[in-house]
Length: 520
Image (cartoon, rainbow, N blue to C red; front, side, top):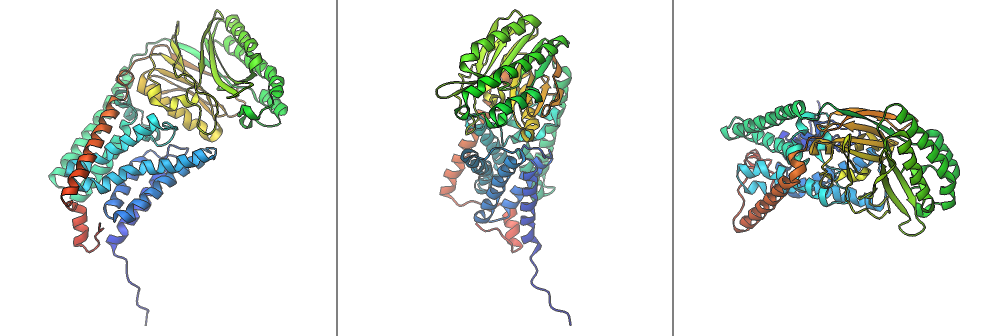
């Protein structure tokens, strides 16, 4: 006689946990890392909301927070982010912050009608992204849903109207409306919301295609060249310092005598490559971040050499250096632009040093802009481009020297490319030890090149006319409006719920009727 089977787990009890595991897997594939699947960014909130709405808050919310913290940790692992106390703290903070919209949906949305159940989550998700991207120390380096949608260029054009955080609202609304349809089936209200959402997304995508076709950037282009130190120059520098340049970025721990010994061979290499780029027809030459390493007492001679090179080759030359100072903060991350007559047109210091990794004093954040025969040129340095509020620049071409590592480079350059769509200028990012890329005013890649190896000079033909966008003119007015509305609605709902008990949600009622209720 066969043994009696053990007690079966009711299908209704298994279902929410399947949603959790599916949502967790999708979340780990949509972190803004190297292995993102664009569709996963849409699936993750759909399933996590489904899980939460069928589970007790004391059980469901910790599980979702575990997913959001794990997602931040996976992002750090994928991109080989250096582990410091600040980045670890940031990992936990990111996880908690990006879990907050789920708290709003689970605890407040059931106390509202259909409108609240549809709009509260996407509004909260957009608000969290906006607050972290604007006021957080890491900007949009992690967590921006737009960064997971690089292949959907037409969809991303909406950011030229409302800013990059709008994508979080669009994806969040898909999750809540999908759950509404799942709960109510063919009910007229659910179908209306689904139809309205489908029409809105279609309008966004079609409008994006139209913008990409008709955005006027003129027919004129300029050849831009990107310069990295050659492998031979890097090897010579490493031999002097006894460590790679990635290990000698902290100027407090570097022997200044070694810096002076290594500087001139490195500069000779950079200027040789600059001459070759000019001979190949480049009219603008851009060095990667910290390409030159010079002691403060040699800085004047280095700038004179740059001025002479720009004049000799009749080019606009953007040189980038790490200058070692004798006193605190011991280093300065900066760029200098020289015109074809040798005139220095700007000095710019990095406005956003990476917290926990770069000890430099931030620059004043005033982005330099100059008029040239090739349009209005402007300049950011690497991490500066991770703060959308700082990148509303009235320019035609924005030059972004970057300094990354192989795991980070491609993703970081693609993130910077979003700024081109949002503001309507071409963007050229010359990246050391990563991937360099040039984008037009609609975010279409003009040229990309792996610059993790000794791959030579990189070239791109870049439009000389930008196309200013509503977002570049009005800034984050849409995000501020959504944030204000979210806070007002959450306050009103929380205040009202103190005076009367919350009605059960349709999903909760159905679950209780089946004997598998989530409880409260």
